[in-house]
Length: 122
Image (tube, rainbow, N blue to C red; front, side):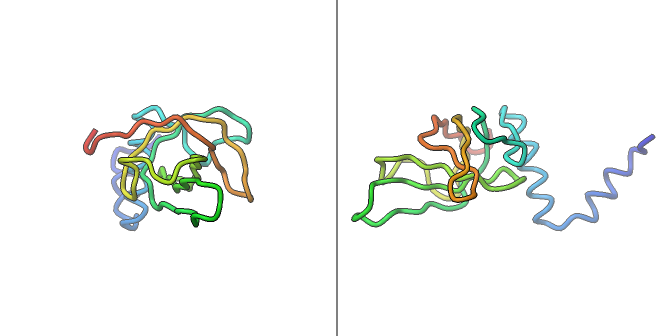
C-alpha cells in the first residue's frame, strides 16, 4: 500500500529538470498525447509537447522545416517538407501533432504531421 506522503517525498528528491519533465508528461497526456518514449515504428500517433528547437536547412537543399518536440519523456523530430517556415511554430511553442512515426537516421520522426498550436496556459 502506498502512503499519501510517498509521492510528496519522491517529488522533493527530484531535480528542477525532472519536475519540469514530470509536468510536461502530465500536460501531454491531458491533451490526448501519447508519450513519445512509447511510440512504435510505423504507428499513427498523436503527441503533444513543446518545440525545443527549429532547424532551417540551407537554401540549396530541399525546403524543409525541422522541429524537435519534447514531451518530458524523449524528443521526437517533426519534419514538414516543402516548408521553410510555419507561422506560430518556434522554440517554446506547444503543439499537438498527429502522423505516422518512423525512424529516420535512428531518431523517431513524423513527416508532414498535422498539427494544432496549443495556446499558452491551455
